[in-house]
Image 1 (cartoon, rainbow, N blue to C red):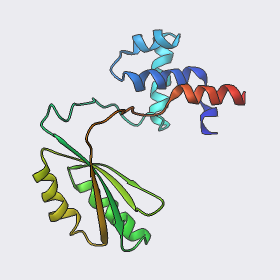
Image 2: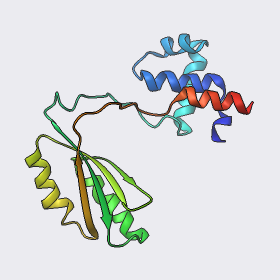
Image 3: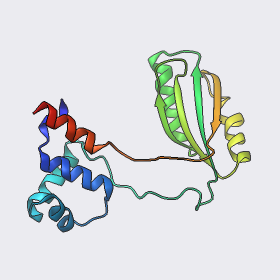
Image 4: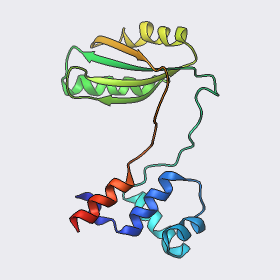
Length: 166
C-alpha cells in the first residue's frame, strides 16, 4: 500500500489541507500537533512527492451564471491508444468540459460539462463534441440537483484501513 510511506502526521496534514487549503502553516501545525517549521517541511515534501497536486478555490458555478451541468457519456469508434489520447487532448481544449474520465464498460468516456444555459450546451454538443473525429455516440444527462460533492479522498476510511493493517 502506497500510504505506508506516510505517517499519521502526514495523513493528518493531508486531511486538514483537503478540508481547508487556505489555512496558515501555523494553524495547520497546531491542528496536527507539531511546530510550524517541521510542518512546512512536511507540506513541501508532500507537494514534491505528488501527494498534494494543487490548491484551488471552490467557486459557485451557478452564482457565476453557469446554470447547466451535464454528464456526457461518449462512445468512440476506436479504442486504440492513439485515438484515446487524441480524444483526451481534445477534451483539454474545451472550456465547458470540466472533467474527463476514461471508463471501462459500455461507455468510453464520461465528461462533466458546465454551460450558462441549455442553448450554449447544445451548441457545444452539436457543433463540437458530436463532430469530433472518432466519436461514435454521445448520451447526455442533465443534472437536476447535486446531493453530494466531496473533493479528494475519505481520510476516515484511510485511517480505518491503516489501523486494521497495523
